[in-house]
Image (tube, rainbow, N blue to C red; front, side):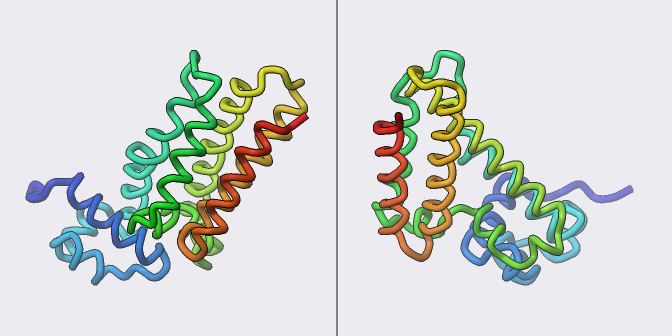
Length: 194
């Protein structure tokens, strides 16, 4: 009979998340995960199966704690017409603040930009699922903010806004100014789209 885990799962996942967020999936080694979590390689593998298993646990927590928390106001049935503007403004403020977490960019988009995504279909699927959730949230926000638009125009605007949000998240790490401009362009598009 195996030993029971002698660690707090959430604490370990948060520690691993910080490493993956700072270094990316491809550049993170198991030794770095050991140092950050305080667990040995065998404990990590016993608990998560592999480095990819640790990353999958990190992504699940990231989606719940960060992404879905921010998207939730866009997806509730009685979402305010200002929900999308609020979402874009909150993201803009976070990136413009220059906080360490904002300077790290988006955990999943950082992973998407690494060559490993081509070799890891499970990681690629996580990123694709994430962007689908983001696009659905933005589409719901656009529908509430611009109820005056026909379905095709609303869908086109949602695609433009989601693409600008993804661009902003991808640029937050290397060019926060460009990320802020992308979010400003997204807000302007919502107001001006005809």
